[in-house]
Length: 468
Image (tube, rainbow, N blue to C red):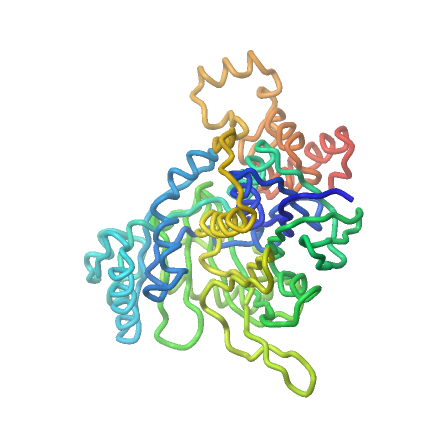
């Protein structure tokens, strides 16, 4: 039976950053993921926003982490060579109820230390963002808000963890956990391992993992959200738009992504499963909201719709011998330590993407203190991204093709992704077309893989993968 100082369960963005941060210390680390690839769960369906801290309760751990994470995000993305755009955001109001919400968020943000906040009049907001409807009453301008590709962000942390000698076990489900005097035994489909520290970052299954050993305390009641993606040619907002509705219900969120497309959503609805399909009425309501708030956006330029399952943690109550969610959503980060050396991130929702590195570092510090571990002086924080031909000027691109001819064959014409990039994605862990898409963008464009799918599948099969 193999032994590791620490085992991380779950290869989403939180698990990947936890594993990376654990390797900053002299701690041997194993990352276990049930799927064949990382960042396939909650991370896969994310609104891609790097939040400022205006939405968080003052003096809370979430507020402190969000403000610090936001301030450090550019440096982090430079280290990991992940595109990041600090485009700023406008939270827009359509009436007195929305105005009151904006004022509250302004005061919260100022208390939390969010820089550059301003309440704008209708004229000021329209001057800054002409795409908005003229019917808005006011807007809260937050210049520090940004956007990042959540898949590439998590995968970059994963690759950096591996570079720093983190051991990985994919396609390996955890079956049981047992406590012993020196730590924990984790039984998996591929055998058992021992560890002194266990970090539970299992996403939607985090509560189930903790309950393998401890009584229920928090359960995840999933919500579903529906999204629309519009083509890069759409003339839309340059800032992230948050709409605060006057009526009950969820407002619009519009994100000009780092790739250049426009992401709309999510809606919010109950979901009993760990997978959700889009619902027509939800997409229609999203389209109506878009027409109301961004009237000039051409919805005919839609290239994709998808649904996401999102965590909604609730405390557990015991009733008639059963443990049931209490029906009240927990708005703070749920970080549990039911026993020494056992740390759980249960139901980490917005701004979990923003705070992924902060949360990973938090768990790593706890583990290092518990293990009395020293700093790993050999840790390398820099990760080299896959070179993208489309980012180069003509002469530099021609020189690259002369050096590596596979850069001369375009596989995905919509996103200008070359054979060399697809092969690099496969070499770095992509085992299917979605894994390639998440790493280099092949299939993300206007035809959604209609032209490049067969070529990508052929390269996957050459490498010994199914490709589907």
